[in-house]
Image (cartoon, rainbow over all chains, first blue to last red; front, top):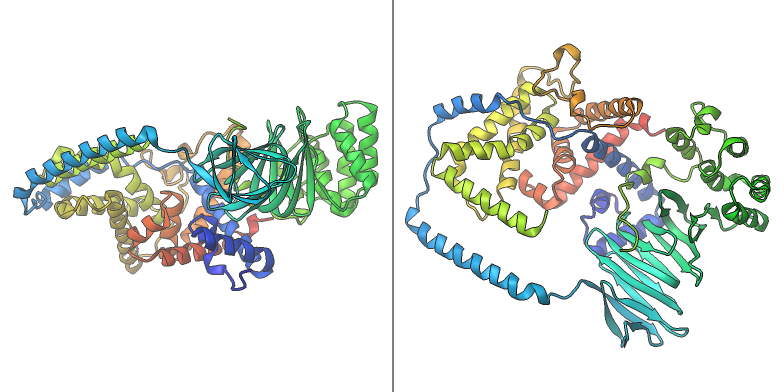
Length: 380
Length: 203
């Protein structure tokens, strides 16, 4: 672990300007140091505000009259001084022409043979395979290739320079994209444990029913034969997204994702069994059915203050009387700010929901919305 | 942009610069047209004042015109241009501080807006689907601009180059004539100062 404080490096970390090993040390330090984490939150907020300006203000257009004014000033300044070495120019032009030709030839010759980008793979145990080839001690997983582990194999993927993923036995993982700003795997089945130290939204995992978007964290992701997935977050945050439906999952929380339904409602792993079972029924039951209504009733009745995370997500997944019931229970557990009226919540006012989120003390809503650019599309 | 397009753009700019070095006035006009909005944006966001931004932009291009013969193509032209802008902004700041308080980033009121180039005119704002949301964003951005105006000039310039021009730390270090560590430090301090000045928007 990295024990020295990292305050001076925080903006560079946020902007992805640190070397990978340095970035990793900062990420590790932030997990253990409250002081630096608080400072990071402050810097992120400042960065969010600054980024807001560039989002909202288009590039300004210079006044049309500027050239006329400038031309007058140029007249007074006279012509620019000519270069002192004109005799060398033909030689330079010839050399530049030759260099251009050589470059064009090089591109033509090498481009078709350039290997697809890939990530290093290390065998941990057994005989993991990339395609049909067994990985020795190390191998290379290239874009489009599958890494497959049988019941007794395990391997580690080095995610570019931003993290590591351990692939457990019985898994199929494909490398989808290996760009500097988009690192993407697809987990078809099995289990993987990811530890990512890059700034948020650089690492994605496609599953059959949702995309896990790293927001700076460590987590475990499992996908069963039926395509159902389970996300457990160890540190930081992960967003689970599918067709506009999103769940934000903090450390010590979990979220199930199901084919055709997408991410379910997240919950803390220490929630009661009754709460978890009722929530599972609510997530899959048909809208308007008695089963769903009863499951919601149980979920609300068994909720603790800590389960406000789940109830906050339920506000967006219910409507009418059901939403009002969720509102009332959440208001008992975490009283909303004065601006967050029942009317605002009933109409699905995003700003009001964000304000209430702030009261949950799980981190600022702005904090993760700073990364809320469009998510690159699911499996290509 | 694809690599080929970037190379072809650079080659085109290289030819333009060579023509400027030969004293070709039309080529200089073309170079001016290609970069005027870039220079104007940095100057305007730094000074927050159209008259100061006008002075800075004119001085930058005048210096460009008189010294372009000495520019060597192995350097990056845009970085050189940003360096001229940053220096000119600092000079303008020092000059005006001696005369009158610099009225940074004052949002133009209805009567004061210049049809050509308002500092934060409504027409500059990107289209938003909802008028209310647009107004709310306008209000927040005005607060951010005001906070930015209160930053120390070096911190403000770092924020402007990073967020309006999207420069890397390396590019900023070249443009500002300092190390990447100093760039990181200025951004750190700038972010913190903005966060403190805008703390009321956090809740």
